[in-house]
Amino acid sequence: MIVRQAANVLEIMEFFAQVKKPATLAEIADHFGWPRSSTFNLLATLSEKGYLYEPRPRAGFYPTPRWLAMARMISEVEPLPPWTHQLISDLSAETGETASIVAPAGVMAVFIDVVESKAAIRYFATIGHRVPIHATASGRALLLQYSQEERDSVYRKIEFKQYGPSTPISIEAVETELRNSISRGYCQSFADYSRDLAGAAIPLPISDRRLSVVVAGPEFRIGPKVPEVAALIARTVDRLRPKTTAA
Amino acid sequence: MIVRQAANVLEIMEFFAQVKKPATLAEIADHFGWPRSSTFNLLATLSEKGYLYEPRPRAGFYPTPRWLAMARMISEVEPLPPWTHQLISDLSAETGETASIVAPAGVMAVFIDVVESKAAIRYFATIGHRVPIHATASGRALLLQYSQEERDSVYRKIEFKQYGPSTPISIEAVETELRNSISRGYCQSFADYSRDLAGAAIPLPISDRRLSVVVAGPEFRIGPKVPEVAALIARTVDRLRPKTTAA
DNA sequence: GGAAAATGTACATATATGTGAATTTATCTG
DNA sequence: CAGATAAATTCACATATATGTACATTTTCC
Image 1 (cartoon, protein in one colour):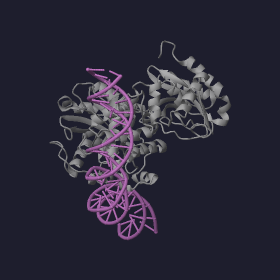
Image 2 (cartoon, each protein chain N blue to C red):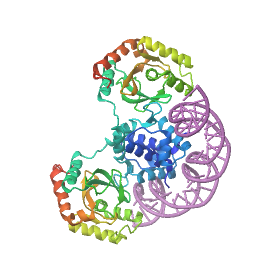
Image 3 (cartoon, each protein chain N blue to C red):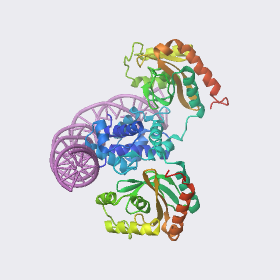
Image 4 (cartoon, rainbow over the protein chains, first blue to last red):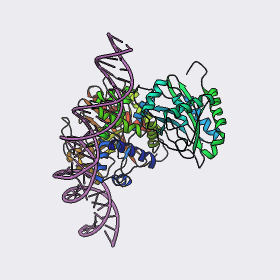
């Protein structure tokens, strides 16, 4: 069950991240199609907690820097080492596609860092974006780092759906694809989950964290180049990853 | 009316900002005294929206960097000029007390930047902290920047409460205190709102924003020095504020 | 290796909560 | 400066929603 008012808080935050200016109660209510009274309650709650204020009289609400202060405190723990951002930055620059660092979240894989392609037609992903762990190159690069028991535990929770023609729709299909990935030396996906999207990924274990790097873009553009993109990813990781032990 | 589940989202965020490590459903539920089932729904909602993930299998949830990404987008708009942080940083260093930048939010004043005193006994304030605009030095330094009509509009919404012995409990009392502040050259408060707390504040208009700076601490320590602290604030603002026009 | 304890998940139901309509307050407009 | 229009608040009630209970799964400990 989705908790509506919890989701609404996030919606409001994203709304402000997008419009980047104060908004009045009426504007917010209209934007989301929420009743004024409900919007009033929600804004009052956020204000009371110190997350919204009114920068100028009658010019509406805007988030306080408390969001930032909290987010900083949360993110200063186990930050990704700086070279991982360099990694996807370089990969995106060299391939012209979107590159990301991905982490597990149950049956899903979450994008925890993203450098977007600058192309007009591109894979549009943001930090926090989630995709099925079994039906994507990035996700399978995570699964490769699991033990058989851990994978089985994940499989039990997966709802296998035919997202595209090549989506693996059974445990055996996923396991086969994982075996192929190992012999191939990298993970790939051709519209397994998102239409027209292809990508290459490799596992990226960092200390005891199980991450992966992925480069993805429109099938017609990246498709034929997937093997070389995969090789490029591997080379770039080799170049940037600190050599001293497993850092 | 307070929207409980909206507040809970903020509570969870603050919980993670504090403990700074992943937490399982059970831990979170126990910490807040929430039912497991409700906690489950809330965590599922936050995960689905891309704000929580599971860094390690079975090690619980932690916020994704999406919080930070959003907070950054929100805060890159009209950031405070860097010299204001320098200002409160210097003030806190020189006085040994907590210094803050404050902005209006209806009948309240919100702390939008804070440098805390390092003393064991100190004014504990965080970004987002709110105090009544009429019963605090920082708040009155904001009110001084309002027109009479704007102030009247605020007064109508204030619930006058006797927070302490010297709290102004009528419009006239507030207006009198404002007049005194003008002739005195700064705003002050001696436990008007918080017990044992005293402070000095002055208005800090920046472009068209109405802000104030305040230095506050325990009455026994800062009380006798309020006039000199106020003078120090004024001098420091003069020193740091860019001279070119009204920046 | 097997039983017990802890944790995570699903669902029906009573109740806390969101909302429509009414009221008050602010802002335009001629 | 009225009178009109729009926005912000309040409040009582019906309903969407949080939770108690039951079940499944995983982990711990002997």
